[in-house]
Image 1 (cartoon, rainbow, N blue to C red):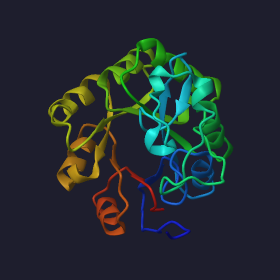
Image 2 (cartoon, rainbow, N blue to C red):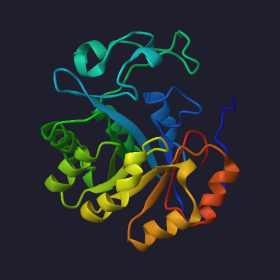
Image 3 (cartoon, rainbow, N blue to C red):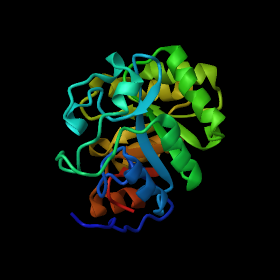
Image 4 (cartoon, rainbow, N blue to C red):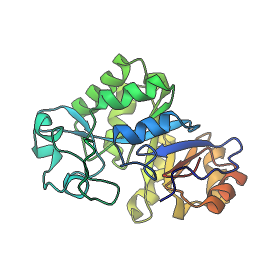
Length: 245
């Protein structure tokens, strides 16, 4: 694997490091966030889960197995147990490098240290209380105005919008989520959501439609230079990527 990012002609498009620079370091690790902090990326994206004891931990999957080898469901487990389990390496191999699932505060601290925009995905369906408490952590770190909250679950985002009228929010939509594709423009109009959409669904017409609504559009996860530069030429606002810069 290469030891540096792939540079692109990004124009005015804002680049977001997906789970940190996960093409060079273990996804959602402090190492990947530090690399992103030291890069030219505008933002750093990550995923936050709620533990059994109502604390917040950074990890992509709902189960730790893929990234740690330990079969443990985050929602059913205690925070103190989760953060003691080491992450596997880039190819899910055991390493002698001690990396662990970060806390929400650790991730936010790196964003603050390097003045990076926070792109925080609310994973799984959460309660209103959980959503509000996550936002309170962001507020307490002084990062609310430089945070974009994203989720595949409309209820998470609706809870957030009703509690925080000025929050920057984007609705996540994937190629396989046919129902979300049907309602995404309705939700965007009703709740002033931006769109964070699977790159396989992006075309110039979609970008123009979102802009006509006065909303912004981000595409995930784009790792191909040619595709990214095509999206840039179409005027896409943001690109989320593992390796491009």
